[in-house]
Length: 196
Ligand SMILES: CSCCC(=O)C(=O)O
Ligand SMILES: [Fe+2]
Image 1 (spheres, rainbow, N blue to C red):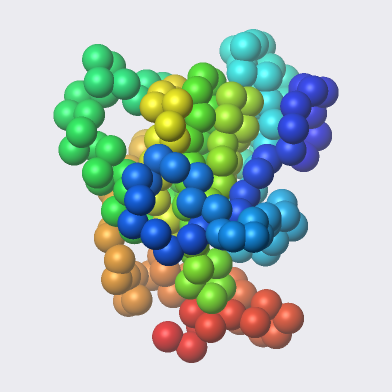
Image 2: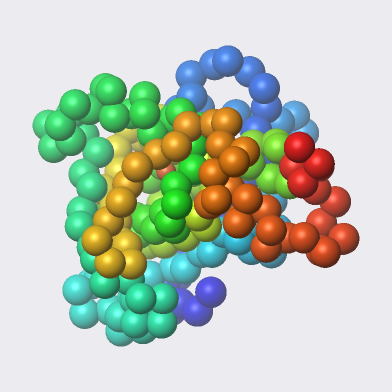
């Protein structure tokens, strides 16, 4: 999406099934990349913004205005700045949903947001400085640092933030059923998850 920032496009790929360190890329062999269009089909949005001048960035202001993101804070994921660091990292990596969008704008560092596709396969989204990602309410997802071991991100929200994670399974959760409902009748999205 629109940006003057000179950078490589966002990378996302299907994950392998190995139990190795979660901070490794976990590419399949051969690699299977996932397009931004595919992510958009899942309801995942991506923007590239100016992380060095975010306070004055008119594009960020426009997105906030359009999408109603009234709240923001900064989440600095390092042992010194994030209380209960080890436990938080474990919680971030538990597969879960939220009842609202999860919006993160990477200001420094990088990390992986993993989301489930329509066939319940993990897609790993590598977010770096300047990436803003919006995960829709009800999508199964998780987060991990990568091997650079650091991320600082702005968290945005519509109104007063509710960060509660609901760990899988959440079949009856209205956020989950609502998410699945948005794809009903979309036959070209051969999605097994609607069968469950
Ligand atoms: C990239 S911010 C740290 C992760 C996080 O806030 C989350 O998973 O909810
Ligand atoms: Fe989350």
